[in-house]
Image (cartoon, rainbow, N blue to C red; front, top):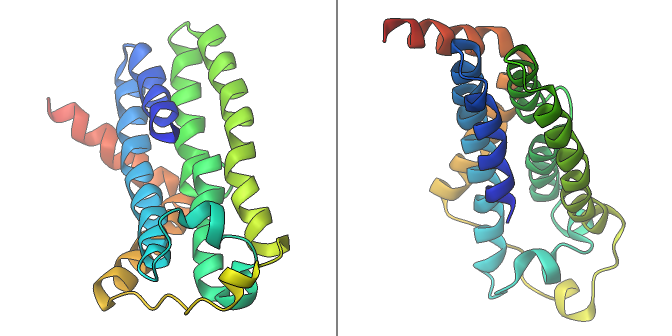
Length: 182
C-alpha cells in the first residue's frame, strides 16, 4: 500500500502541469527508488533466515541483535516518512510546492495530511526495532548476513537517501535542466 501513496505524491507533482511539477515528480521518483530498494533489501536480508513476514515478526528488538541493519532500515523508514534532512522530505516538499504554485493548494494540503498519517506506519517499524522486545523465536534466530551484493545495495541506497537529502538543489537542478531538453 505504501507504493500507492508514493505514486500519488508523484501524481501531485504532475497535476501541477508545469515544468516545476514534472521536475519535482522526477526528483521524487528518483529519491523514492533508493529508499524503497534499500528497505526491500533489508527485508530480503531478514527473510533469508527463514522469516516470511520479516517486518511483523523480526522487527521487534532488531536494534539489539543487528544494530547496523536496524539503523539502515531506520534511515529508509525516516526517508519514506518524509523526515528531514533525508531525500523523502525534499521529494515531498518539491511536489507539494509545485502543486501550490500550479493552483492546487487543496490537493497539496490533502497530500500533506496523508503523508502525516502514513508516517505512523513507518515510525511504527522504527519503534518496534528500537523499543520492541524480541520474542523467543526471534531472539534465537540466526543473524541475517545477506550477500555482498545485497549489502552493497543497502549501503548505496542509504548513502543516496542521505546524499539526496543534504544536496537537494543539485538533484532538483539536474532534473529541471534535463526537462528543458524536451
